[in-house]
Length: 541
Image (cartoon, rainbow, N blue to C red; front, side, top):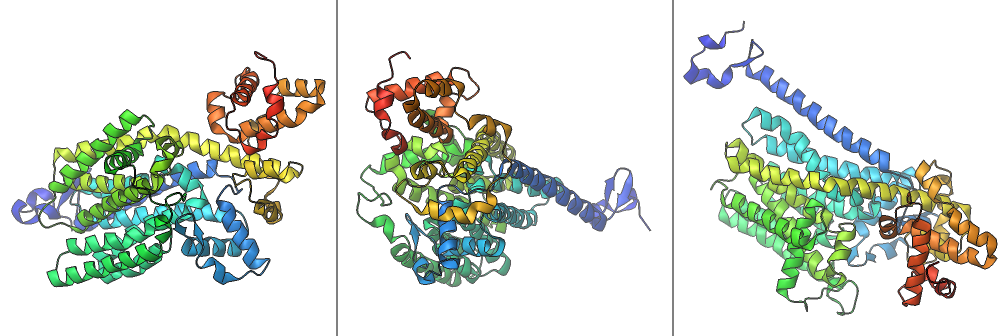
C-alpha cells in the first residue's frame, strides 16, 4: 500500500517519500530510477566515444608500434630469447609490462593493432566506471549521482588524449593511468595501503611515469583515516618502493647529459616550472604560449582553492581526486625535466603530455562535483572550466583522428605495393630511417593489405597532375618529384600549410622544396638525395 507524501510526518520520513510525476514512490523505486538513468547516460556516452574511435581507426601500425610487431616476430617466428625482453627499454621507459601485454594480445588475436587499440579504449572505460562508482557513493544529490557517470567517461576520454587512444604505442601510459585509478579505489575499498601494492609494482615496470604510483600511494596512505602509526608505516613502505624503482627502473634518465633520454636541469627551475604550467594549460588544446600560461595558472589556482575548501574529514572521493591531481603534477614535472630541451612546439605538436594532464582534469572535476553536492557555487565554476577544456580541445581531437587514419591508410597502401625504396617505406611508416626491421615485419602484416581506404586518401596517393606533366617531359624528374610528394603525404605540417584541396598546392610545394634546398635547409633523409634537382629548379617556377 502506498502512503501519500502529505500524510507522512515530514520530520521523520522526509527522505523516505518523494513525488515523481504525480506518483508516490519509496526509496527502492528511486534507487532503481537513478541506476537506470546512470546506466543509460554512461552507455550512451561510452557508445558515442566508441563510435568516434571506430570511425577514425585503421588497422596498420606506425612508428613505435612496430616494436610490438618485431617482438611478436622474434619470439614466435624466430624463437628468440625471451629473457632479452625482460630488461628492454624504449627510451627511458621499461617495456616488460606493456611489451608482455601487447605481444600476448598479438599472439592471441594475430598481428595488427586492432586489439591493442581496443585495449586502450577498455582501459580508459574501466577507469571511468570505477571512478564514477566510487564518487557516486559519496554524493547526496540524485542528479549528480546520475550525471557523474557520463562525466567520468567524457573526462577519461578527454579530446586532448585522442592521439594516445588511437596509438597503441601509448598503451603503457594508459595502463599507468588505469592502475592509478585502481590503486586509489582499492585503498578506499579495502581500507589498507597494501591494496595498492600490486598496482604500484606493476606500474614501476610499465613506462617511467609508472614509478610515480608508489609515491602517490604513499601520499594516499597519509591522507586516509585511522591510526597515524599505520598510515605512516604504509607511506614509508611506498616511499621506499619509489626510491628503489627510481634507482633501478628509471635510472636511464640520469645518464650522460647529452643522451636523448637524460634529465637535464641546466635550464633552471623557473623555466622548467613555466614549461610545466604550459603543459597543464595544453589541456585546452591550444598552442599559444601566452594563453597556455594563463590557462595553466587558472587550473592550478582553481585546484588550490578547491583543495583548501576540503572538509577536515575527507571522503574517499576527495582523497582519490587529490591522488589524480598529484600524479598529474608529478608526471608533468618528470616530463618537463626530460623533454624541456626539445622545446614547447615539439611537446604541443601532438600534445605528447596529454596522458599526464588528463588525470588533473578528472581530479579537479571530482572536487568540483563535491562542491556542487554541498550546494556551493564555486563548484559550478570549476566544473565549467574543466568542461571548457574538453570543448576547446575537440577541434584538435577531430583533426588528429583524421590525420592518424589518413597516415595509416597511406602507409598500408604504399607499403603493400612493394616497389618503394626501403628508406621511403620506413619514412611512411614513421620508423627510424636507419632501422631495417620494418621490412622484416611486413610479411606478418600482409593479411592487413587491401583494406578499403577513404576517398580522400585515394585521391592523394597519386602524384598531382602538375608533377605528372613534369615527369612526362623529363624522366629524371620522376624520382625527386615522387619522393617530394610522398614526403608531403606523411608531413602534416606541410598539409596544414598547403591544403591538398587547393589547386596551387603542387606549385607551392615545389617552391618550398626549392627554397629549402637553396637555403641549405634540413631535408628529410629521403629527399636529400634529390637536393641537386630541387635546387636547380628555376626561381619562380
